[in-house]
Length: 294
View 1 (cartoon, rainbow, N blue to C red):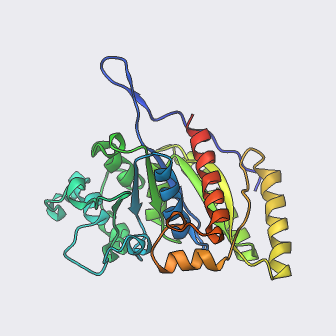
View 2: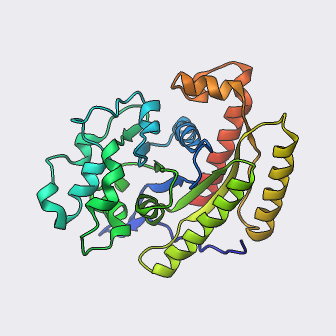
View 3: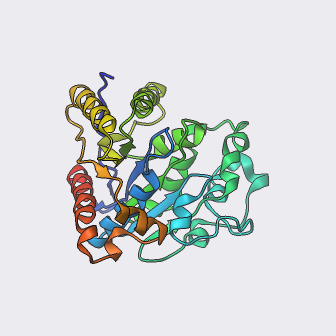
């Protein structure tokens, strides 16, 4: 890979009195390859941040709406507004497609707030194809203009398993990037392609690429020797090429994580010792995020 990524400047801004006003840090879990568990990691990391006192918003940017489902939101309800309408409403050139919805109408409040996704997101690229304003910046400008950044400490974005315009929008809007991967040859290629896209965003000059905060080996099967071998190879390459980016301890494919996911609960909803190691691991992701924010 041999790639170096710039660290973004803080997004905190000064108000008219010279006081620093905190703004949400936007973090995404992203990998172009599906089946790496990014939605489960997004969900539990959001709960980990909430557990240490942060106000968190999740935004589901995947047309499959898996994160919305974890929050018990019926994404098949075509009348319920979601992130697609908010993105379209934020583009003046698409005025004929605007609805009455603003983000306060769409966000679903809870211990963790969420702006859900819907199938219409799959038509995002076609919907904005003819606009003159920069198409990669639709999400970023929506977040900046809507005052959402002033309402939360962290915004966690779950992304689709592609490298299309939706993902480019996410990468232009996010400041921090968590990269889950499976220990196999396909994931290795996917990681390389993702880092190439980050360089492409820097070259475009319309936005800074997000800082890569961590690589997360996920759904690792400890019983398979080949996975152990592949994992060592990938970790070795990552550490050689990205010396300042940690590769965290593997998340193994434990029955406890499957159980919590099926029940639409976070690992923090359980008190048994089976979940203790998972809670520790997600707390370590929070440490990485908080240390990066300082």
